Image (cartoon, rainbow, N blue to C red; front, top):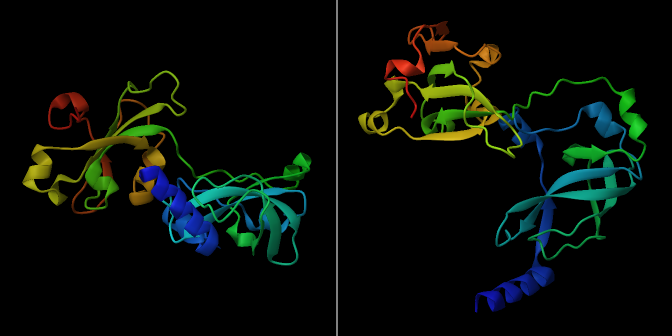
Length: 240
């Protein structure tokens, strides 16, 4: 029955469904440490033969995803517009197929592959803000209900064989003054990319290269982080 419903839904989507190219700029503004968009000079240089990646949203939303990141082979690039053909099949947008023509703006592009790979040498190198090494962080920091109150860096011990990104050793705790008694008694944490923490609270970015053994406590009056000798082994700071 479920498979039949899925086939009927896909048929309805192919007949009546629409799509829209999503503007990536608000995403980049909200998540600067985990989301990349090309520089303006690179966007201006896109031309026929290049491949570009855009975000396409299904209307109505698909069964699994509300949007997908898809590659397009550029066939024309007049002014601010880009015209091309989808270069891969969407996973959950049955109203679109590889080869379909699509038109969008240059600022819709989130990634590119030059036909002439030497073209990248024309542009200045821009240091990436993305931070993909992992850390352990209190969940309240991620959901925005509390700011960072204490952080320390220990010897990385959570990296597993085959992990694409290693453990940084950073352990990041929420400000206890912003937590309920229940949250303090039953802490919950996540092992995620440092960039996702910075998207929520980057007030500690200037400390990110501090060596193992470093620990910092936020002054509740000034909001500034101050170096402390307090470490994970001293009890309350233990994240286990």
